[in-house]
Image (cartoon, rainbow, N blue to C red):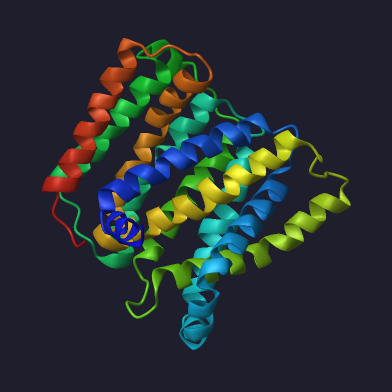
Length: 303
């Protein structure tokens, strides 16, 4: 089992394809419980559960590398603030006010925002093929979400939820670029646990503020199941896979895999909600796969 896990851990594109699957489920769960669990509460419990799970396996490594973590405290704080607290808080807040169509389109802007940020912060090259791959993939996203109906795209209206999600997309791009700055001697799992614990600490005042407002998590099985999912799958497994994938191939190529979120969303709706897969789904998936393949295989840049 350990050998199988290690082999999976060294396959970046498989890892990067797995993370969006977890996050597609997270978007569905976040939207489903928007009236039940407050945004800062679901974010706090997500990372409390994730931290508890990871600490059971990584606490000795974290203690062994504690001096190294403290030496790079600025990076840990930066990644925790952007990728754990700010990004997910803005997403959960945005899902309170916007539609699933708007949310998916805005989140799909992440790869487009990663490219210039990686260029500025990491001096990663951005080739014409890479840009073409992103554009083709984004076209695929738009086809799936709008069902290939231009009128639906033109009818989209911007609201405050969209603005929250737009801010979240920018924060995720910043986080993804920042992951590449990890010092090689710092073990990935140790860095992840440090980020989660720091993010949990930063999110605690927001969580306590919600409690003071009388906004509590309901003590019901559905709420516990939602928190369990976002903690284990959208928290632990997705972040392990994403951080490792970014480490192996760089943020430019990794970012494009976020376009798989609406693809997985359509499949999840088909499997669990009884929705039909239609022709536009397959056309959109074809564009996304073409864009990812073009960028991953032929695009120039530091990995």
